[in-house]
Image 1 (cartoon, rainbow, N blue to C red):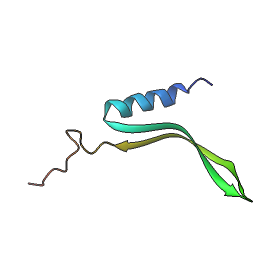
Image 2: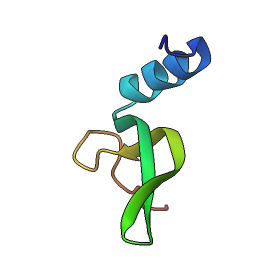
Image 3: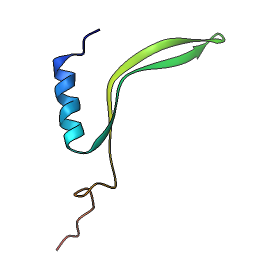
Image 4: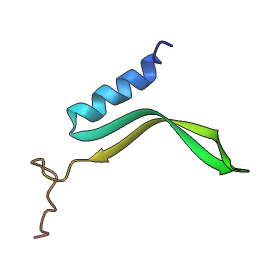
Length: 60
């Protein structure tokens, strides 16, 4: 399956800005002793805390 151009643009933007990214995740639930796909998530992004520019700034 070919990725959506809008998702590719968002992923590129987030990577350039220092985010850790996971794409195309399926979430599963346990029902009656077996797992089934509940939904899918296109993009999960978490800022990387050790990158410059991510520190909290003091107010003057």
